[in-house]
Image (tube, rainbow, N blue to C red):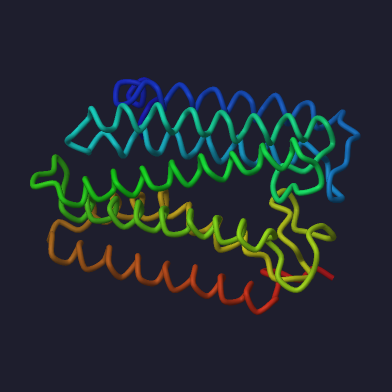
Length: 262
């Protein structure tokens, strides 16, 4: 189990950013107990809490994984960009939540629309930078880790990039629901629609490939000493998970909810 101290030794900027967002999520969680502002039918603090938690996990994951990229100078500049974009995105989401306004798909007001447009531009910038850094990692000639674990990191990063751009597809549609309007009944915390298809489901499971695939790859590499067998196992897990995410995307595009509660 890796410690916070080791994360800071690997990448202090991302490690500290992750700690910051974890604290923000806890504070917002406490405040949510007393908050009466409702946005799209739920406590307005739910969304900023979700994003703060997601950013915490994202930051600590990258602090750990990007240590294996040989060109650490590129990692340094990527880390600055990542923290800047995450601060902006979470800042907009939180401020809008306190004002009782939506942050994403906001076309009802000029300021909200500009903030959302800038958010989209910054996220595309960051996702593109992630793709470039991923390609640098893939094209490295040497690795300080086993081949199966390195492969799992490559796949995790690639799937993360693909399904980050899937978030851009939602922006193009100006909605995450298929078959009905945003709002209405949703699953606890995540608030995925229980009535219509919700593109956020595939987006969520897709971007968290960044954690799941490398975690499984690390375990496989540790337990299976035959490198060829371990590599094949990583591919099997990755392909099955990709099929699972694709099925979720197709389900939502057909207008079917991830889960129906009723």
